Length: 303
Image (cartoon, rainbow, N blue to C red; front, side, top):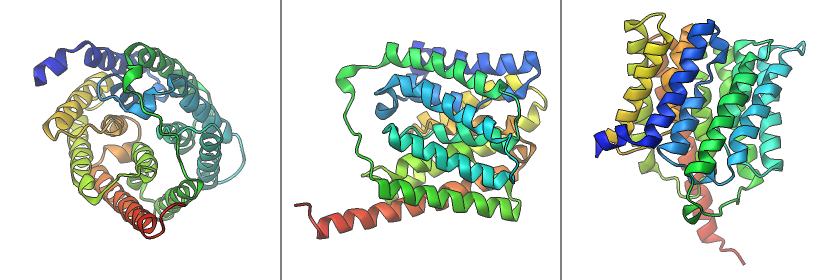
């Protein structure tokens, strides 16, 4: 069954799309083209379908594209990087709430160009092109019969998780620990925080997959220094294997696997520690909050 998955048309399509992004970045010598979450989105649409992602395929293109352009545009404002990131986070969350979108990868699409200090729109244009392809794939691969309607998202939950993420980012900037700023993990936490059935037992397998992904990604990065295509292609394949072995599909893990190619700090052995600490702590906060909310709902039933 494992080899059948590797040879499936859906996996090969997603994998080739990621390799194409890596190849374009390598050939053009522009790493600004790389958006790690393209790998996560491709796998989350074609290989490990996330129902609320593919329910409205247009959002797969429009939301991260708007986020990338907004994030890049904020770099033209004369304010400290931390304030730009906070402003970008708030703007994106407001837009997602207005348009009733709960698509986590929109957050890293907006934050990454600010964190990298990008002043041209190469990243945004690249994001628009590759997410457009993913949108087409979502229309082609989705099964309307399996889609569920779950648009409920409480504003209180959104405000709280936005504040938590903002405080975490502020802590990372203050302590100069860039390894604690992990955009794909922020996307995961934002979605899990809104998940009604997120429990403590769901933390361990996700934390294991993400941490092992980070460890192996850094290892491959050092084994193949300077090889964007080789490192990226191998890391995505390794992440797929980990998701299968642990029977825990975590699309954002594919984004984590490409992060060492973007920023030097994410290519050090401190990066897996940052992934473990950030993911573990924020997921524990999410699980505790969900338990409190669910217990309160039981004690105070709806009328």
